Image 1 (cartoon, rainbow, N blue to C red):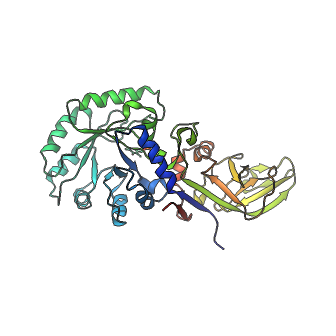
Image 2 (cartoon, rainbow, N blue to C red):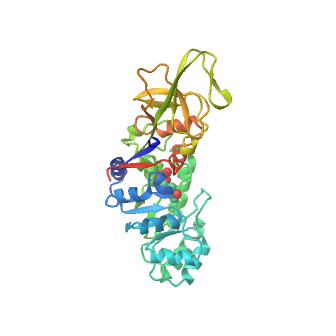
Image 3 (cartoon, rainbow, N blue to C red):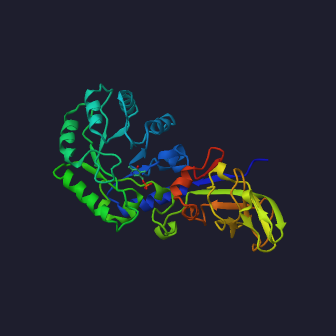
Length: 361
Ligand SMILES: *Cc1c(COP(=O)(O)O)cnc(C)c1O
């Protein structure tokens, strides 16, 4: 029999979430971020699902873009980290990729390259996150050089990234936006600033191109907020099934280290999913899971291939019953919060062992 841990990926939900993003800023163009294998959902399938719905796609690194091109995805595509050497530049030109330029040296490399065709450059400015980007004071000079280079086409996009967009009242947001607007003033070029949190929560960050990722997969980037409150539908449901059931006495311990001890006679369900599937090992006792749609609580340490739930208070529970670990009816961010991380990490951490089953292909 097949081991029954799977990630159901609802591509219709991703399309619907894309509509939500589109409606927030109907005059902007949408560049859907599908880096890290589409946030763990399967980048090729997500790219195919969004092909008609978006104006461009974005990945983090060249390898991800090439994988998509080799799968036949012809949509306009941006490499967010750019390329690091001449062969990367040649490859980007060959594969018709847009590239981010975030460092002065990359402008020089582009100028001295001989490319099969010019590339589209997104010039990234460091307005305060201090991760990637040229200094604001260098923007005009770099734009002049890009405009003069035959290796750069005339679709240059000016962009930056916000450090704290998920806290819409954070003072750094205004500072970054002002720094950006100051350094690009006088340049008649397209602009791009916001990720999901900016698109949802910071009106001033919505520009010609918006770059949502997380929300497209049906999740809210804001702590303590349900996806449904934004009209978003979770696209990944990670589920497994009960493979054993037992009744234990008060005082009996469950799992490695005996970290949970029953205070009364209890019914324990063993589920065929563990940290080797991407379920967080640090999930504490009490973390919710859905058994036949009813809330059960994790008890005991998560194992590599299994976890245990207290199902004492639930109605009929049988071996073979389905268990939702996150997704429909149980936001991944709830599991993440309890485990001391964010939903992004859980989604991108679902391992290769877990088959993806696509709905709406
Ligand atoms: C990942 C990323 C995004 C998308 O962020 P979300 O929070 O997933 O919406 C946008 N822009 C850049 C530069 C990124 O690296």
